[in-house]
Amino acid sequence: MSEMQNPYEDILSLPHHVSPTRPAMSMQDRAAQFSPFSALTGYDSAIKETARLTDIKADLDEYERSRLDAKLQVILEHLGEDFEVIITYFLPDRKKNGGSYTDFVGVVKKIDEYEHILLTRNGKQIPIDDIVEIRIDEQWDF
Image (tube, rainbow, N blue to C red; front, side, top):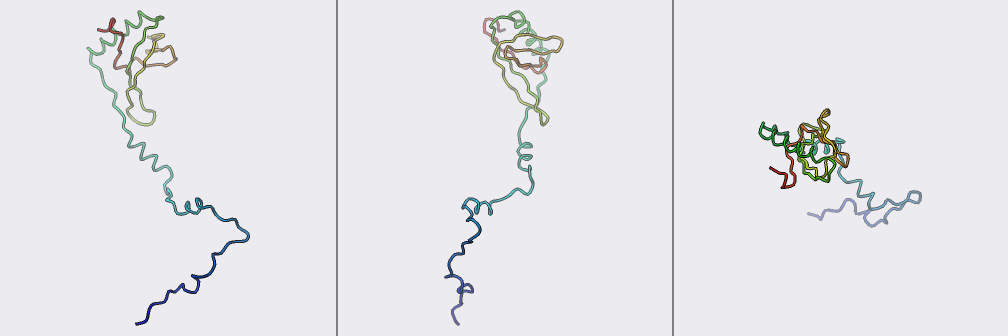
């Protein structure tokens, strides 16, 4: 049996072709031709959004509600002072059901009973119905 001959033997020793009219492509551009592509634009983002976890807003019982009301009363008595509080509240998610719990640390400027919101010194508005915990200085805490 004879040795098999390479079908490209006749062109293997030819010099590499260089176009006289077109500039050479950079290595990065050449590599990009072979990189994977996304056939479904936005699909990866949709998968990540679906996988993102959110919390469910907790319902407070009457005892917890009355404790919050008492602490709001203490805050109301100290408006205008540098009375720092830590407020944990539920922040609804803008894209899907649920949300997350976040803390505000600072001074409450006003309690708007008509709109049912707390206005902070830095301009944040916190809906009173979304508050789950208020921590204040130990001398006022109960």
